[in-house]
Image (tube, rainbow, N blue to C red; front, top):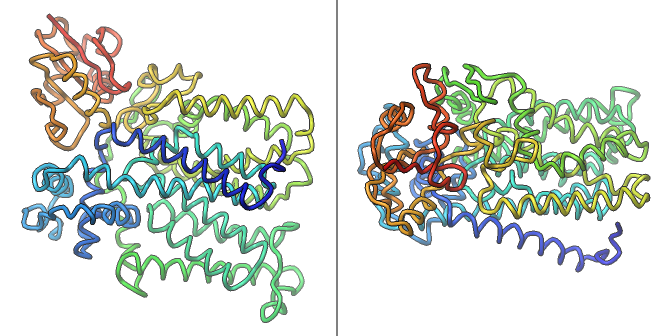
Length: 548
């Protein structure tokens, strides 16, 4: 594999443009057919209220950056912000969880074009994913060369896991992007210490902190890199000029200088955070809101894995989820990378520390602390692993014909996995898991069903003209928002009917996530997912049953 045809800047720009266009086409063509997910009804109105009022009272559980982008995208549409609704005042007073009420008022009642608003709010995330593709190219290129850069960018472009969140107005894709850019920016500083590279690393770190609170893991990572890289060969280039005398002292001099530089990055990052919160020079509000990150999650929530519900979940949940929801082609490519290039002297230990320290920390801390409801919590690991896997093209063994053919086949298979999943990226499962049709048997919640297929249900009901349909969605808003002319039935009612023999006559359209929760009921005598035959399963997330 050679970069000769694309060696110049024009060729590189052309390839990256094609890949970014591929991201846009895949994301945009799917976002318009997917209904509002569980979190978006809170994030989108919150972001617009930030932009219009500068008041951050709504959705303090996550930092504002991605919500600000979503809100800014609504400005050309000039929607009405219902600040006269009681939920707005209640949010300021800290009365209950009012953001969902305000979100429904904003998108369902106050504005007649709510569906258009959701589409517009999602567009900035698509552009952030395009930025991620470019960042993956730059990082892999600097580490392993231009061909590796193209490979890393291609893997990001066709990743069903990244695409699943790269078209939703949520925080997960933004975090994955800015974690990657933070690691890359620190790598740039370590290779070429300069005031501008230090400032850039601090700014990117600040943007990462503003995407999602789990980005605070980057601060201890910065400390680890600051201590470890100067002690590794080629890990930290020592500066010239004013700091040279300190940095070049025996043994601990370079470490002290590196730690000082990392501290400067954190200071710059906190300054960026303070501007993001509209409190210049005062970032303390960030740490105040950090304590609210799990305020709306039930502490007794039963996590589901492989047919079993457990309060607190299982320690290997996120690793198992990664193995089940990552395309098998990439797992094979990653295995080849470990087998052929991981121990090569041509790759510095410093590069491995830069990539694998955040991957290991994310999996470790998230497995220890996060609620087990989705692969999205470890999404930042994907771009970093794509960059590492792309290094296989720089391994000496890559000159072997069998390896080049195998890698090319893996990349083609990987791309086909994404294209065949379109537009249903969220419930993607690999061949090990039995595909998307079998996903609900392994996992639930945002791994499968986040309330994203009400538009699909609307289309199905319009085409079939079924009457007397009872709908039980996974949504925090009235499904009539999407023009569903059906009876909305609470989950406890429909699930109690479907978990007993001989349900009453009628048509039931029920969320897969909620159907799965029937298995928690020890009195249920029927498992709707296995004992009942659906008329159709829409998007792998909505089961439609018809009983004469």
